[in-house]
Length: 319
Length: 307
Image 1 (tube, helix red, strand yellow):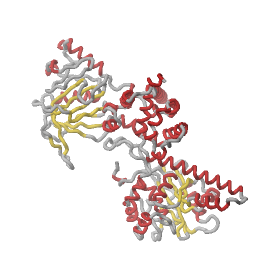
Image 2 (image 1 turned 90 degrees about the vertical axis):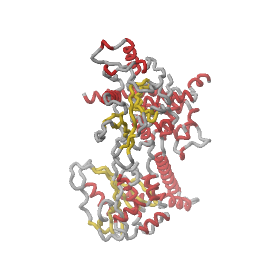
Image 3 (image 1 turned 60 degrees about the vertical axis):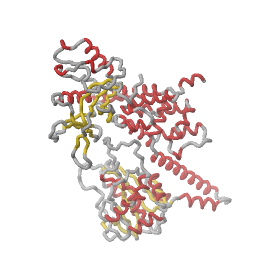
């Protein structure tokens, strides 16, 4: 059931597993990971990092201008890829596309490469519209979100407000740090970065930390994601190269890391399967099994009791 | 007591002549269909059915199960002819249009008011103007709720009035009134439970552990990538089931179903599960229908004892 604004794009969850799955469907050999801190050690462990994605929800106390917009300046001559967000629900995919569109020598599947050539030279608005009109992209995006389990079309159930996170991409383009925000007219240039040492991420850290501090405490809910190379192939190659060598520490370290990565991928795969699946059949099958096991009545009685307790607690709180 | 829901075997609360009207596509016009019909309200085990029947063929053209307070029949003010009504819902955008067909307009308001009173609260007995009382012989109901055949001409049932002139209420009428009241269970505490509590983590774990023979029936409903392979141990299967039923998407599906069942509008959906339409009436009704389905499929309770 699409409302006017969604143009057939469903709202997706914004976690690394979902993003990584999207990258897979674009044929891009990167993954997306949660970034719990911007400290050098955390970032170092994830290098090479191609882009940082800052996602946030802002709870304004007053309808003032959003803070954090003073930094940097608009670059209307930006030579790279930039698309406006023309469909709210597509925000996550749009952020990924804005990032990928600026990565030199990108490896991607033919459909995505075609889309990038097709949109070359377009102004941000037209580019945004072209991106959201790509049916195959929309389908890949929608495949990440839950199916509507029950056809509730026309029932007009009050929807719980699905707030979308807002996504902003930070990445290096031609020696400067850029901020790509689909809701802004142009990319924002934050100045040049020092290519040595940590490189561009150092500048990104400053800019992002400054931005976070401009929001009143508690008014901002945010998350950071890192778009990076998939580490597993590299680690495997290294492990193969070390076979038979005496580098026990490094070997066991690598094996640990590979094992951790695999667990994480397994968890993502489970979550993605679960997310895409229509569980209603399972709900019915479980209730039927409870009935056949002679346990449905007691489950009902339990549920009624729990409900009574809940109602009493509520009444107690209100009196 | 089993109820055959394909015929109108419940207790008819009221009925009156009316035709249907349909919106002309893409416009705000509604065209009256000339077919002679009737709006019939019945009560089947506490569930209110709003039906439209073709008076010539006896066919039920519309059968809606209504949740109390959800629907109302309102006059369409723009109808110059003045007898067009629309059935509207709180829970959805659905609209059904009707026009009153009784040759006299004298009772229009009475029919509609009583209908709306019942739709708002099935426990309210229709109040009929005693002067308009029809002979009770055409309207048979019984306290045990046995099958009745739908009236071929339309008469309000039981001129039971809680009304100004008690002297005119006969003993037979009082008995019928008591019968109606006792069968109108309405929507009581049965419905005060959440599906999410019925399918609590604890209840499910107990089920998985105590009735492993039922587990295979659950596998086909798991996300396809997670279905246990044939050489999976029972423990592995339980782990997968647990993980799935504890996952946020599963919990969300349960909550969505709970919410949707309260709209009373899932008739088609519950039928696709092999359940009767009454199962769409609320969480309690849904569970009752599933219990029946389990019995019909040969529940294992009795068999377990024989093992």
